[in-house]
Length: 339
Image (cartoon, rainbow, N blue to C red; front, top):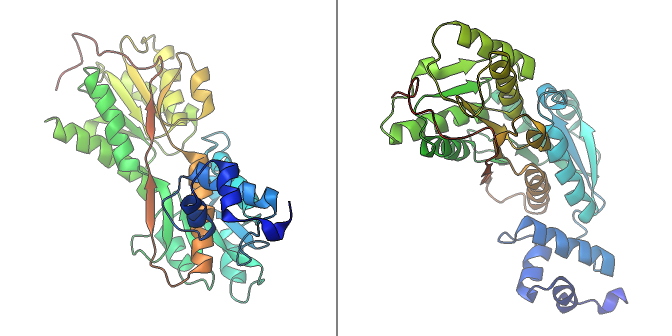
């Protein structure tokens, strides 16, 4: 088909959507689902409809913290977010490049004109965010947010998701829910807040003794911590909500080693929703973070910031769903399930 004859009506017919929807996508306006936006953009490329010149051919530089880049054994969260970024960048005719925090700080001033901006993934602390806000190119925070609202961001709705996961366990009759976490980042702190919020709403005290902290996301570190907790005395919880799937897997390991039935005696809920949850014994219930959608939306936010730098920063949080599998079940009728 001749590019000069391609109209919005052609794209709308090809994608089975309205012309208004195509117009919103091409103008990079909000209000269109990520998967539908991807479909329209892919059809535009395939049919030869010109992708906006302001972003096509540009480079997005992913700047990941050290923790994000070494999470292969801990989570693989980064890999799934990266898949979403690559898919969206390809649909927009962009290139995705991997950089480092130091490289971004050192080269942004007077950087290559082809660099549209930076995607800062899981920054280690607020100092990194503050430094990123000083760069002369757009910066989008991924799996984080700017407390001063200088930078746009996209992340899961951690507090609400943790509250919903806690609610699932409460509906199963659990009252003593151990929160297993690796503290340090604001996003993880919000998961603890969600756990505490839901318990408080239910009239239960979020007992600090039911917060178990570890210093790494590795399953074996979590397993050792849960084993030590069990050895301290009579078990005082009937469920575990972990701040990450890797921690939940460690909890399953420790409970199995101690001869504690899951979910008959203790239920376990993870947080990430990675594919390996289904391979655990028993299969792990988990909060499922829309990781690829986060990656796609990060590229869209960068495109928006590049094309309209005067727009105010936006903080976008995506809902997470709860996947219930074999690791969660009704609370035991007697014993440790006390308020």
